[in-house]
Image (cartoon, rainbow, N blue to C red; front, side):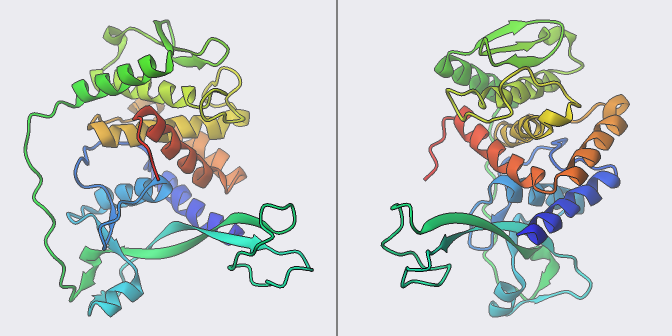
Amino acid sequence: MSAAYEKITNQIIEALEAGHIPWEKPWNTLGSSPKSVHGKRYRGFNAMWLDFVQNRQGYKDCRWITYNQAKKQGGQVRKGEKSQAVTLWMQSYNHQSSCPVKKSKIPCKNLGKAKCQRFMIMRYYSVFNVEQVDGLDLKPLPVAIENDFDPIEAAEQVVNDYLERENISLVNGSAAYYTPSLDQVTVPEMKTFRSIESYYSTLFHECGHSTGHESRLNRKDNKQVVKFGDPIYAQEELVAEMTNAFLGGETGVTSEVEADQRVAYIQSWLKALRNDKKMVVMAAAQAQKAADLILDRKVA
């Protein structure tokens, strides 16, 4: 399992070292979220990372495929093309010595009786964008329908619905933060932000923190005010950053770190991720749950 976390985190570190922030959303990707070649939409870390690669490489097709899948469909990955590592969570079983079932992939009747146990393990596998593969006979992607969709109106609706549904108070202050003891989001007035997109990105971030409240997703690092740069709360801060990215992808609101903060921001995350190779994967999973909660999306 450690090899999987190492592989995934090293991808993120490589991007940060090159000056790129994978969970930043300086573009609008509505309608082009990463999908498997079978049409299943990626979630969590996989959605964030493949979206980043898709846009950095300029791929017009949002579908991804494994080497073996491409081969079975008569395709061939072009020589020299680089794959991307994505996560796969699998059920595994720890059987007691007295249990007749010995294989870790097979359940047994002793589960839930404090004898044999079930748990999840993470593996990684490699995928290529379909534009990296020759010879595939795929159906064309559906043409996006143009409409008068307004990202700012969508963002306002998402925030208002969530705060009202969860009875969270929103107040103006001199800084942006979430106070768990008051269940309160504080942000500066809209007119003080450099852009209206920055205002809603900040609101998304603080709403992300609020999902960790004990009455919601109950994250352990969400018991007091979270301040950027505090290593104790680095994962909670990353959860909020990625929640902002996921909500931006849903509403069309873009976000980008200000140029004067960029170097310090990247260096802070490089330090945190080098110290904890599980952080980015776990944060992405928690951020997906946070975004689903804010959007009131029921996931099977």
